[in-house]
Amino acid sequence: MGKRDNRVAYMNPIAMARSRGPAPSSGPTIQDYLNRPRPTWEEVKEQLEKKKKGSKALAEFEERMNENWKKELEKHREKLLSGSESTSRKKEKKKKEKKKSSRLSPSSSSSSSSDSSSSSSDFEDEDKKQGKKRRKKKHRSSRKSSENSSSDSDSDGKDSLKNKRAKEDYEREKDTKSLERKRKKADRGDGMLSTESSSESEHTEEVPAKKKKTSEEKEKNDKTKKRKKHKKHGKKKKKKTASSSSYSE
Image (cartoon, rainbow, N blue to C red):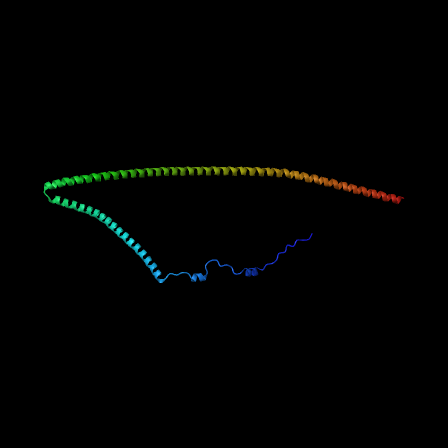
Protein backbone atom coordinates (compact mmCIF):
# COMPACT_ATOMS: atom_id res chain seq x y z
CA MET A 1 0.00 0.00 0.00
CA GLY A 2 1.57 3.29 -1.10
CA LYS A 3 1.00 6.73 0.40
CA ARG A 4 -1.56 9.07 -1.14
CA ASP A 5 -0.36 12.14 -2.99
CA ASN A 6 -1.77 15.07 -0.97
CA ARG A 7 0.22 17.77 -2.76
CA VAL A 8 -1.62 20.85 -4.12
CA ALA A 9 -0.54 23.06 -7.00
CA TYR A 10 0.73 26.55 -5.94
CA MET A 11 -1.22 29.46 -7.41
CA ASN A 12 0.38 32.91 -7.58
CA PRO A 13 -2.17 35.44 -6.20
CA ILE A 14 -0.80 38.37 -8.22
CA ALA A 15 -1.03 36.39 -11.45
CA MET A 16 -4.58 35.32 -10.56
CA ALA A 17 -5.63 38.96 -9.94
CA ARG A 18 -4.13 40.04 -13.27
CA SER A 19 -5.92 37.26 -15.09
CA ARG A 20 -9.26 38.36 -13.53
CA GLY A 21 -8.84 41.87 -14.90
CA PRO A 22 -9.74 45.24 -13.35
CA ALA A 23 -12.15 45.17 -10.37
CA PRO A 24 -15.59 46.69 -10.97
CA SER A 25 -15.81 50.18 -9.33
CA SER A 26 -18.47 50.47 -6.63
CA GLY A 27 -19.98 54.00 -6.24
CA PRO A 28 -19.53 57.31 -8.08
CA THR A 29 -16.15 58.26 -9.43
CA ILE A 30 -14.45 61.68 -9.50
CA GLN A 31 -15.58 62.10 -13.09
CA ASP A 32 -19.19 61.64 -12.02
CA TYR A 33 -18.71 64.24 -9.23
CA LEU A 34 -17.30 66.78 -11.70
CA ASN A 35 -20.08 66.14 -14.24
CA ARG A 36 -22.90 66.50 -11.69
CA PRO A 37 -25.85 68.83 -12.53
CA ARG A 38 -25.35 72.33 -11.06
CA PRO A 39 -27.92 75.13 -10.54
CA THR A 40 -27.67 78.35 -12.52
CA TRP A 41 -27.07 81.76 -10.96
CA GLU A 42 -30.75 82.67 -11.32
CA GLU A 43 -31.85 79.58 -9.43
CA VAL A 44 -29.38 80.41 -6.64
CA LYS A 45 -30.82 83.95 -6.38
CA GLU A 46 -34.34 82.56 -6.14
CA GLN A 47 -33.34 80.23 -3.30
CA LEU A 48 -31.69 83.10 -1.37
CA GLU A 49 -34.79 85.25 -1.75
CA LYS A 50 -36.98 82.43 -0.46
CA LYS A 51 -34.76 82.11 2.61
CA LYS A 52 -34.96 85.86 3.23
CA LYS A 53 -38.74 85.79 2.96
CA GLY A 54 -38.93 83.03 5.54
CA SER A 55 -36.76 84.98 7.95
CA LYS A 56 -38.91 88.12 7.40
CA ALA A 57 -42.05 86.22 8.29
CA LEU A 58 -40.46 85.01 11.53
CA ALA A 59 -39.32 88.52 12.40
CA GLU A 60 -42.82 89.88 11.80
CA PHE A 61 -44.34 87.20 14.03
CA GLU A 62 -41.88 87.96 16.80
CA GLU A 63 -42.59 91.70 16.56
CA ARG A 64 -46.33 91.07 16.84
CA MET A 65 -45.84 88.87 19.90
CA ASN A 66 -43.61 91.50 21.50
CA GLU A 67 -46.25 94.17 20.91
CA ASN A 68 -48.93 92.02 22.49
CA TRP A 69 -46.70 91.37 25.51
CA LYS A 70 -45.98 95.07 25.83
CA LYS A 71 -49.69 95.90 25.83
CA GLU A 72 -50.39 93.30 28.52
CA LEU A 73 -47.55 94.61 30.65
CA GLU A 74 -48.83 98.19 30.37
CA LYS A 75 -52.32 97.08 31.42
CA HIS A 76 -50.93 95.26 34.46
CA ARG A 77 -48.82 98.29 35.42
CA GLU A 78 -51.82 100.57 35.11
CA LYS A 79 -53.84 98.33 37.39
CA LEU A 80 -51.10 98.29 40.03
CA LEU A 81 -50.57 102.04 39.77
CA SER A 82 -54.30 102.71 39.99
CA GLY A 83 -54.51 100.52 43.14
CA SER A 84 -51.61 102.35 44.80
CA GLU A 85 -53.02 105.71 43.72
CA SER A 86 -56.45 104.81 45.05
CA THR A 87 -54.98 103.93 48.45
CA SER A 88 -52.94 107.14 48.52
CA ARG A 89 -56.01 109.16 47.45
CA LYS A 90 -58.11 107.55 50.16
CA LYS A 91 -55.52 108.48 52.76
CA GLU A 92 -55.38 112.04 51.49
CA LYS A 93 -59.17 112.26 51.53
CA LYS A 94 -59.27 111.05 55.12
CA LYS A 95 -56.70 113.65 56.16
CA LYS A 96 -58.64 116.43 54.41
CA GLU A 97 -61.89 115.34 56.04
CA LYS A 98 -60.24 115.40 59.47
CA LYS A 99 -58.93 118.92 58.86
CA LYS A 100 -62.33 120.12 57.66
CA SER A 101 -64.08 118.58 60.66
CA SER A 102 -61.66 120.33 63.01
CA ARG A 103 -62.31 123.68 61.26
CA LEU A 104 -66.12 123.29 61.32
CA SER A 105 -68.51 124.33 64.15
CA PRO A 106 -68.62 122.61 67.56
CA SER A 107 -71.71 120.68 66.51
CA SER A 108 -69.94 119.42 63.52
CA SER A 109 -66.85 119.02 65.65
CA SER A 110 -68.89 116.99 68.13
CA SER A 111 -70.26 114.84 65.34
CA SER A 112 -66.82 114.51 63.86
CA SER A 113 -65.44 113.84 67.34
CA SER A 114 -68.07 111.15 67.76
CA ASP A 115 -67.05 109.72 64.43
CA SER A 116 -63.42 110.06 65.33
CA SER A 117 -64.13 108.58 68.77
CA SER A 118 -65.90 105.66 67.14
CA SER A 119 -63.02 105.23 64.76
CA SER A 120 -60.57 105.68 67.64
CA SER A 121 -62.58 103.19 69.70
CA ASP A 122 -62.38 100.77 66.79
CA PHE A 123 -58.66 101.36 66.62
CA GLU A 124 -58.39 100.87 70.38
CA ASP A 125 -60.36 97.63 70.17
CA GLU A 126 -58.07 96.43 67.45
CA ASP A 127 -55.01 97.49 69.49
CA LYS A 128 -56.42 95.67 72.53
CA LYS A 129 -57.01 92.54 70.49
CA GLN A 130 -53.51 92.71 69.08
CA GLY A 131 -52.11 93.33 72.58
CA LYS A 132 -53.99 90.31 73.92
CA LYS A 133 -52.68 88.17 71.07
CA ARG A 134 -49.13 89.36 71.73
CA ARG A 135 -49.51 88.67 75.47
CA LYS A 136 -50.79 85.17 74.73
CA LYS A 137 -47.87 84.56 72.41
CA LYS A 138 -45.43 85.90 75.02
CA HIS A 139 -47.07 83.76 77.72
CA ARG A 140 -46.80 80.67 75.51
CA SER A 141 -43.20 81.44 74.62
CA SER A 142 -42.39 82.05 78.33
CA ARG A 143 -44.11 78.74 79.22
CA LYS A 144 -42.15 76.94 76.54
CA SER A 145 -38.91 78.57 77.68
CA SER A 146 -39.70 77.71 81.35
CA GLU A 147 -40.49 74.12 80.35
CA ASN A 148 -37.30 73.94 78.34
CA SER A 149 -35.31 75.46 81.23
CA SER A 150 -36.95 73.04 83.70
CA SER A 151 -36.19 70.12 81.39
CA ASP A 152 -32.65 71.43 81.03
CA SER A 153 -32.32 71.81 84.81
CA ASP A 154 -33.74 68.29 85.30
CA SER A 155 -31.33 66.93 82.75
CA ASP A 156 -28.48 68.88 84.43
CA GLY A 157 -29.52 67.50 87.84
CA LYS A 158 -29.65 63.99 86.41
CA ASP A 159 -26.25 64.46 84.80
CA SER A 160 -24.81 65.78 88.10
CA LEU A 161 -26.30 62.81 90.00
CA LYS A 162 -24.89 60.42 87.41
CA ASN A 163 -21.49 62.09 87.69
CA LYS A 164 -21.59 61.88 91.50
CA ARG A 165 -22.57 58.22 91.38
CA ALA A 166 -19.86 57.50 88.86
CA LYS A 167 -17.30 59.27 91.08
CA GLU A 168 -18.48 57.33 94.15
CA ASP A 169 -18.32 54.05 92.26
CA TYR A 170 -14.84 54.93 91.02
CA GLU A 171 -13.66 55.78 94.54
CA ARG A 172 -15.14 52.53 95.90
CA GLU A 173 -13.40 50.55 93.19
CA LYS A 174 -10.16 52.33 94.04
CA ASP A 175 -10.55 51.51 97.73
CA THR A 176 -11.37 47.86 97.02
CA LYS A 177 -8.41 47.57 94.66
CA SER A 178 -6.03 49.15 97.20
CA LEU A 179 -7.31 46.78 99.93
CA GLU A 180 -6.87 43.79 97.64
CA ARG A 181 -3.33 44.91 96.81
CA LYS A 182 -2.49 45.32 100.51
CA ARG A 183 -3.89 41.85 101.27
CA LYS A 184 -1.92 40.35 98.43
CA LYS A 185 1.24 42.05 99.66
CA ALA A 186 0.59 40.80 103.19
CA ASP A 187 -0.04 37.27 101.90
CA ARG A 188 3.14 37.48 99.87
CA GLY A 189 5.08 38.69 102.94
CA ASP A 190 3.72 35.79 105.02
CA GLY A 191 4.55 33.38 102.22
CA MET A 192 8.07 34.77 101.96
CA LEU A 193 8.55 34.47 105.72
CA SER A 194 7.21 30.92 105.71
CA THR A 195 9.46 30.02 102.76
CA GLU A 196 12.46 31.62 104.49
CA SER A 197 11.73 29.72 107.73
CA SER A 198 11.22 26.47 105.83
CA SER A 199 14.44 27.07 103.88
CA GLU A 200 16.29 27.76 107.14
CA SER A 201 14.89 24.59 108.74
CA GLU A 202 15.79 22.61 105.64
CA HIS A 203 19.28 24.12 105.73
CA THR A 204 19.69 23.22 109.40
CA GLU A 205 18.43 19.69 108.66
CA GLU A 206 20.75 19.38 105.66
CA VAL A 207 23.88 20.34 107.67
CA PRO A 208 23.82 17.34 110.08
CA ALA A 209 22.76 15.07 107.23
CA LYS A 210 25.81 16.21 105.27
CA LYS A 211 28.01 15.72 108.35
CA LYS A 212 26.64 12.20 108.78
CA LYS A 213 27.30 11.42 105.13
CA THR A 214 30.85 12.74 105.30
CA SER A 215 31.55 10.70 108.48
CA GLU A 216 30.09 7.54 106.85
CA GLU A 217 32.16 8.10 103.73
CA LYS A 218 35.31 8.56 105.86
CA GLU A 219 34.63 5.32 107.70
CA LYS A 220 34.11 3.49 104.41
CA ASN A 221 37.34 4.91 103.03
CA ASP A 222 39.22 3.87 106.18
CA LYS A 223 37.82 0.33 105.98
CA THR A 224 38.73 0.02 102.30
CA LYS A 225 42.24 1.30 103.03
CA LYS A 226 42.64 -1.20 105.87
CA ARG A 227 41.44 -4.05 103.66
CA LYS A 228 43.90 -3.04 100.93
CA LYS A 229 46.72 -2.94 103.50
CA HIS A 230 45.77 -6.40 104.80
CA LYS A 231 45.70 -7.77 101.26
CA LYS A 232 49.11 -6.30 100.46
CA HIS A 233 50.57 -7.62 103.71
CA GLY A 234 49.17 -11.11 103.01
CA LYS A 235 50.66 -11.09 99.52
CA LYS A 236 54.06 -10.07 100.87
CA LYS A 237 53.94 -12.88 103.43
CA LYS A 238 53.09 -15.41 100.74
CA LYS A 239 56.00 -14.19 98.61
CA LYS A 240 58.40 -14.45 101.56
CA THR A 241 57.32 -17.99 102.41
CA ALA A 242 57.66 -19.05 98.77
CA SER A 243 61.19 -17.61 98.57
CA SER A 244 62.25 -19.23 101.83
CA SER A 245 61.00 -22.61 100.69
CA SER A 246 62.92 -22.30 97.45
CA TYR A 247 66.15 -21.49 99.32
CA SER A 248 65.68 -24.46 101.65
CA GLU A 249 65.43 -26.79 98.75
